[in-house]
Image (cartoon, rainbow, N blue to C red; front, side, top):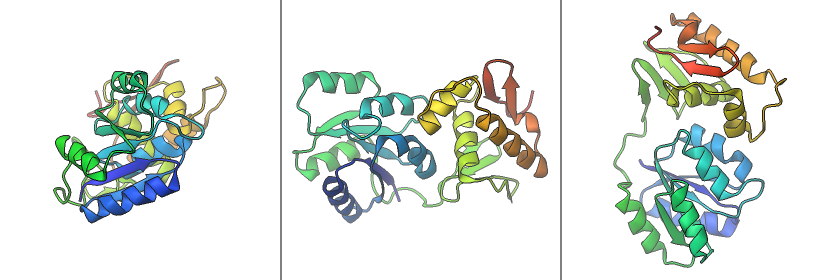
Length: 227
């Protein structure tokens, strides 16, 4: 079943859309503020995101920009704004479409279908493969040769984010910004602690700890197969 994530702080709008989308055969998740949006995207792994602009804590433009650091699915801005500037900004940040909230639901539905997101077209047990490491969003865990790493939710989100940036060095600043909405102060070692825990769990299932490679003074890199 195709997944839609609604990022919208207006409960009435969000729940109305949820009911209509579920009636069309979609699985729907919701988040109601900007600061929780990125983590929700990683945990849900939606096929398409409906994103409001005016959100508490962090606006839709910021979220879209951060999402395009790793998320390749469809992003549709759903907003009450009639501003041409807002629409132009949305596309400039990587959005796929822009729909006014006042438009009939059928218009939104057709736009979603136009992006190739149709209901009931995918296995609910969808997995994401990086060679033979299997990420399972529904379980928020990773598997290797049938063995679960037994990651916590935060460890899964961190490992998944680094893996999606394969071949690139991912800085602590970017990790904290995307996953926590915070800036790196040069002292915080919470990311290093989580990386150490993930490495221990990789080793336990027979994988190299160097799948997450440390790059001195720069950050981390997904390094699989290990070179």
